[in-house]
Length: 315
Image (tube, rainbow, N blue to C red; front, side, top):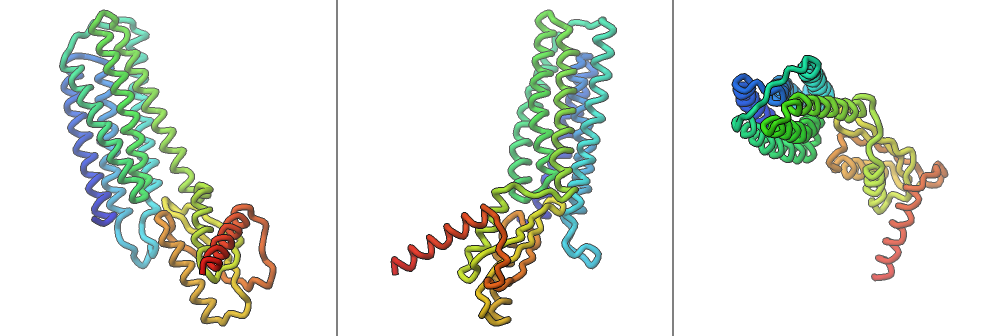
């Protein structure tokens, strides 16, 4: 299945699941008056709204490249994720206001409701399943919007657990635990928003990817038998994907056609890495001595030479 169809299908699944949970929690909250369940209903309402944003955002980001967007539309995804974060903060603020008002008023009724317990248990199971599914799909297809949603679902498991503890506590004679659980839910909601913003700011400002990926890019370039060295390796996020530029060093006696073939082969191998979008390779004659100090490059070159020597000895 293509990235486009997969991401759109996941977006629709999220919308349907969150809408069903909102309706179930809303009905139980109205019947029981539980602040913890009400806070979870508000959380699910926010989830439903931003699921719509995700469906629309994923529709845009998975459109094929066109004349105005020759590299595709994936770079919209971090902005979609920030809309997700805005919805999360709004939901958290609403829950804090509601539970804080109840605590200050001090008039909290006891609550005994199997329905409240049941709907929260179902929510925990559903959110745990959505967390695992969205995280797997988001990492497989490099979708920051889905990874952000997975994080939200993970924290929803924790907040629903806190709400469940509050409802059970209220049922056994400690009604104050119900609004206190709602506050815990709110803190979890806000923490999720901070995580989503932190992760996606890196995509928007062109931050460097993890060092391990840079080493993998270098290793891939140096694996070419005619590449003797590399320098000026730059990798940075452009949206959720990575653009790479680097210089490779080859023997100076190579013809222009040979240098072109080496460059094309290195570009192809680097772009085959899952997270890399575009690679730009400049070919330098080794004899120019443009080598620059880089511990990662030095180690990889030594490893490559040792491997080549062992292969030659084996022959």
